[in-house]
Structures are given as C-alpha cells and as structure tokens.
Length: 92
Image (cartoon, rainbow, N blue to C red; front, side):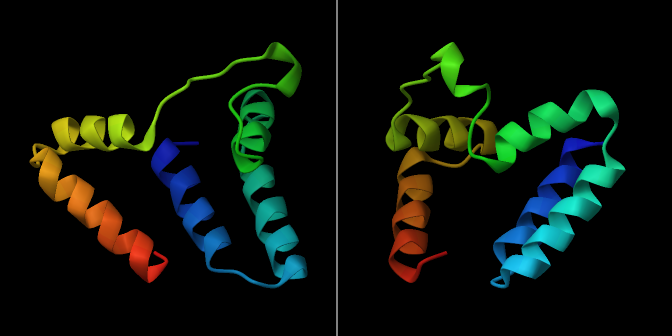
C-alpha cells in the first residue's frame, strides 16, 4: 500500500470516536495491507516504529521536527512554528 493511502486511513481513524467504529476501520486497513506490511502498520498504529524491546529512541524534539518540515516544505521556520502553535491552541 502506498504511504499516502495509509495516511488517509489514519486521518479517518483520528476522526472516529466510537471504539467499535475504530476497530472496523483498523480491520479494513489491515485487510488491504500485504503480509509484509502488517507488522509495520501495527507498530505505527500503536505510535511506535519498532517493538518496545528493541529500545529504539529517536530523541527528536518538536522544534527540530518542525524545522525539518519547514525545510522540506520550503516554508520559513518561523511560519511553521507559528502554524504548529496555532494548531496546538485549537486542538488540531
């Protein structure tokens, strides 16, 4: 599955409040994945990149991540930081 399609499923999941509906959406997502993709998708759904026992830590701060987003999107870092601050205030 293309990451774009996976991200679209994650966006739909974020908007669902019912546990049963979330379960249904996760089932639909997992059925569309190949066998090789399932484990990675489950880790991402759990907010991880690898199993906990591997001890992988990125130690990236939010500002560093936002700076990287700014560089990738050709936006000024100040604008990206302001947009992140604004979305945090609104709960987005």
